[in-house]
Amino acid sequence: MSDNYDVIVLGAGPAGYVAAIRCAQLGLKTACVEKWINKQGQPALGGTCLNVGCIPSKALLESSHIYENTAHGLSAHGISVNDVKADIPAMIAGKDKTVQELTGGIEHLFKANGVDWIKGSGTLLPERQIQVTGSESEKTIYKAENIVLATGSNSIEIGSVPLQGEVIVDSSGALDWESVPKKLCVIGAGVIGLELGSVWRRLGAEVVILEAQDVFLPVVDQQIAKDALRQFNRQGLDIKLGARVLASEVTADGVTLTYTDQAGEQQLQVDRVIVAVGRRPNIDQLTSPETDLLIDERGLVHVNAVCETNLPGVWAIGDLVRGPMLAHKGSEEGVAVAERIAGKQCHLNYYAIPSVIYTLPEVSWVGKTEEQLKEEGIEYKSGVFPFAASGRAKAMRDTAGMVKILADKNTDQVLGMHIIGPHSSELIGHGVMAIEFEGTIEDIARTVFAHPTLSEAIHEAALAADGRALHIPNRKR
Ligand code: FAD
Ligand code: AMP
Image (cartoon, rainbow, N blue to C red):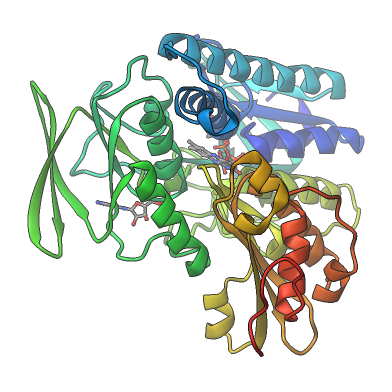
């Protein structure tokens, strides 16, 4: 038996490391157990998000966008550049440097806040004990008043397309290719598949995305999703819906995939494949056999509204529990749990969590979609403003997309905001605040937005909801 702690957090992704820092800030003696070994062979903090998720994918999305825009997008601004080249190994090295700086930053924050990093793999035992297995297989048991489980998620693998070297990879493998495949298949048109497909298309790959479902982005407001599909197709992403992959064969020439669609069985020959069919909670070796932690049929650790598990003093947060698998959702759960452990009040509004697909155009949303409002029988009004009518978007020569606001018809309260277009990941913060503050269409209509900015489109969409937009003709009501 080693040290006793007030709190031990298992996993140092954005859920766990934030929980640990907040616990330490609140005066609790805190340790965080983390087993990650990075591609340089070193122990690292930050979890999926910093090592193989949010950050490296955004680094490559940014680099590949700059390349594509420099090569093909500058003529509208009267700029010509000859002989633009992408140095892929340098791009990957730049991404790795960003990752190392950020994961090193978490280590620094742990030290500054007095969080002990216990390196190794942790398993929950009864009576709030954690057994940690270190790099030499040595085992140490720690005890704490409170345990926070934050072991995150892993990519789902499909038996029909087993991963193979650099030829068939998951999302992590697709962040490390040092050459551009000539023809690439992405399996799964979810957020991760669309982002990684976009990276490699921009760098020169011919990209086919096979998606089993008939509906494109079913969780997104369908007016926005339809616009996104049109724009992605125009960019050259060949997205085949209703296409379920059944088998794969690696040959000397690449990979032959067999899939079914409405027309029957099809074959597709590609050089490389990314399997991006979703993620599953990481519960492998999470508990010893005698620990009675409740796990549901989807493999999620069961928690109540405030992230308590069925075991007293054991909490669970992040991708390991219900709700969207998003870094900011996990981090806010981490803060809320830390504050609750410290005896404070806390609040997390699951209804006001934004989602973003970092493609171009970016697709961002918060709150209810029009389909959800119809299904729930809520009387609503809708205001739409296209970026084609925005002075700032025109000046940027980036006019694709729109802002859509949905509000309760009777109370005027904003219920959803959906944006496809330039910098929508930043703009959606206005929608999050409106929903968090229980704002109304009238509140947004009376707010002054700087001119010329993209955010004026939010103002105009709010005006449009009441048939009083100034820069587009209003619908007859
Ligand atoms: P994780 O980040 O998965 O961290 C869990 C940690 O626990 C890991 O470090 C793991 O090593 C450790 N661990 C597991 N088991 C044990 C154990 N037994 N002992 C010790 N340690 C253990 N989300 C966004 O919000 N925005 C994005 O742009 C975004 N982009 C993404 C892009 C990609 C390619 C991927 C794969 C994901 C992306 N996500 C994004 C999702 C985001 O990464 C996750 O939602 C987030 O990382 C979940 O945080 P977490 O702390 O719950 O788990
Ligand atoms: P997400 O869960 O958002 O990451 O998206 C993963 C996507 O992969 C979902 O839209 C699934 O429908 C899709 N998918 C899962 N299995 C297959 C398969 N065998 N072939 C094609 N698409 C798949």
